[in-house]
Length: 108
Image (cartoon, rainbow, N blue to C red; front, side, top):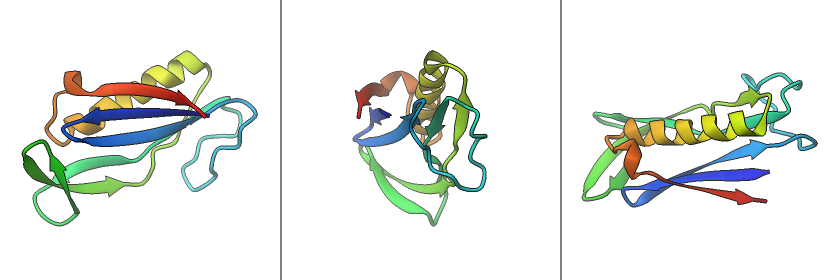
């Protein structure tokens, strides 16, 4: 299991990459069992009102969360690159520059 974490604007987002031999969570929308690598992470976006208030840098942002977005991949490299892209995209959706996102990987 590999945790892939992005940090920017004083907040963070962490998703999980399940590797061969590990059991990813099973729920509606989860990828087929045949995928050797499965990435699971929240998705969120900025809303005008409602949602959860999150402090991002020097401003408050209302954030709404979507269901986790599980995705299956054939190789570890593909999965890691897609995970990094996913994390950067979430920060872009709340007004941060993807270049400002620091990505770390942690083996579990």
